[in-house]
Image (tube, rainbow, N blue to C red; front, side, top):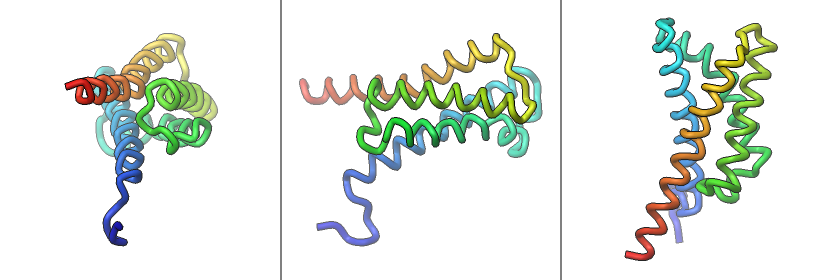
Length: 131
């Protein structure tokens, strides 16, 4: 039995997974702004991150990420694809620019971030079961 103020075990991976994705998208925005010597203030980072954060939310909804939040393929690949596509679409609509080089770099970095941590977690879980 769980108390009302303590999340269930099922809620913990969900919240942690979503929070990890959000943090990694923000880290992506910070790295991008810093590498181009742009303002790394909260406002500057928010300007760069919001299209991808909106894409991330859409990715979670499309993949129903809450069903398997740590699954690299079932959730990670879909969340990544929708995050990149949605983020680029929103950047284009908002006039932020979508150059091919940026699309390629963003796709690679977000793949490493959003699928990478899930793959690493799966390998650690598999190793813990064997050990």
